[in-house]
Length: 305
Image 1 (cartoon, helix red, strand yellow):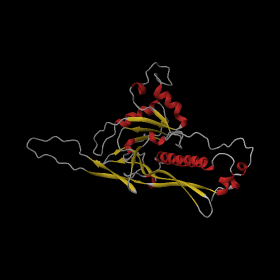
Image 2: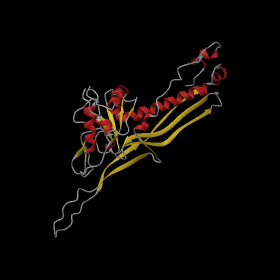
Image 3: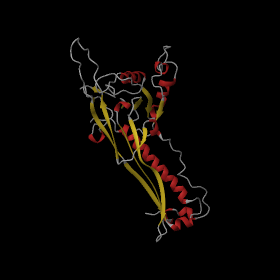
Image 4: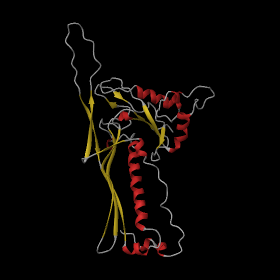
């Protein structure tokens, strides 16, 4: 349905001092702090995790050498979604508006709408990451955040704490230690470290105290802040305003091929006019997907409260 003069009554008359409601500032593209971005030329993308070899055994004198098998572990799939929206203006509304350009005003609003959806989609991977439902499973058959990511060796990796814990010095130090003890598919230790802490707005001040103060917080002891001194979270922290759990927090790690964002079709804007009605239509459209390949690219805690 086209936006007509009936929806713009005040803008057809002189004497209006200001139009407001579309000038709000917006948050930056916060998904860039979480995801590696790649382009895609297919309707979907797949990435397969490979399993290497077990720890090399001792060879006894005169015995035959042991041979091991490598294999594919599992495959992650990214299904691209089409995000699109538009609006239409009647010819009369464009002619009779006495103030700023209707098309310029509403194309800005359309851009804001498209950007908002992208951030919600990006954060939804984390927001739903603890949900034990098949629609939220990754390539290894469990949710993004799980204590039982299966390994070819028969063991498991966990990118969640044993018990949910709010963000504090103890829980953050425990997460750093847990990340350092992850193994590959055959049980060999990997040198994994946290890179950046991701928090909702409600935890920004806690994050600042934990990562940026010189001394330990919440204690009268004159101890150094070991998290800051050791550079345990080298990239500091960032706020994601689209997280729905006010107590959840996350650590992006240096494990490659973790959180990924594929762009199938970049954002494109177009317009056309209808000869019969004179209406002018505007639209924005893009195709992309958010997801993860290796769940060890991130560690998550839902919080205890």
